[in-house]
Image 1 (cartoon, one colour):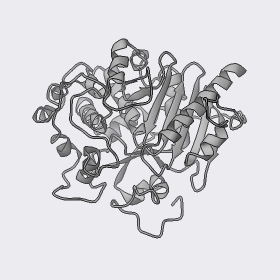
Image 2 (spheres, one colour; image 1 turned 90 degrees about the vertical axis):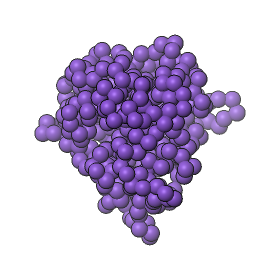
Image 3 (tube, one colour; image 1 turned 180 degrees about the vertical axis):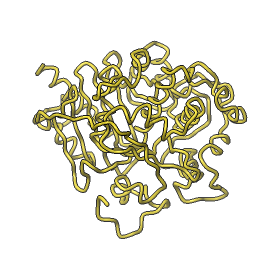
Length: 395
């Protein structure tokens, strides 16, 4: 147990309440069903240290904004832990009680980048074709709105499926999914049917291949497709293809539904350092700190593709992503054009910041009371940007 348990028992009905998430995000296995994703038998990748006072770095001021330091941002954004690593060397690492270096923290949608990376390993192995229809791998999806969608549509979140991601709306599909898998209290006529049967109920509202629209169900379908293409459950695919190759310190923890199917879009849990080890892949051309290749140069080139179609699809999104000129590719956010800065993001303040130009990985795990909070997200990105700029100047 990583913190003093709240007075009220934490259950599927209340684990996401603002007063409970700090505890539940650090103790998910006590609240919901989980399985382990093995770190394998390889040695733990050492993370040498060169301590730097990065907290005192000033963020560039925007007109009308007060001056702010990196430390000020971290202290004002419900941070549980944060870390900065450059070329495999830790420069700073901070934990706020009760979080420790051994705590598995819920990643929310940072999980999507893990699943996208598994897809990359299957593409590299010739087992998955991104241009193939999803029904080639999961024929049952022909009965759903995903009939006619391709794997590429899933990776870039450009299907035409009807799916609301309004986290504060209890009737939104993102919340109905949680009820279907037993991660939330059942309401109305909802039945606990499991992840895959729920996905089959989704309908299309437009053509596939249109604007980017952030939908968690895309990753859940992608996970299903990966299992079919790879011939194994996600816990095995992720372990053998990714987690056992990065020199992880601990097993990854994956939340599951009633049938041990992974909650692919937001159910993974990891330590801070192991997330940094994972993020290192994206600034080191797909090679882990153990020297093993995890994904190919071709896949990394595809991840960092920036073309006019992607940018236009992102700009045409029905929601305001507040990242003008950015795009989304292979389950990863790219907030700025032409910078090579990539983000894995999860609600309530989870982030891996990856900056190829400086070899920097920043990780932040948080317990924001609200799922989405632009006033905390964008200062965090700017704080990591400021650190990256400082490191570039030092070099």
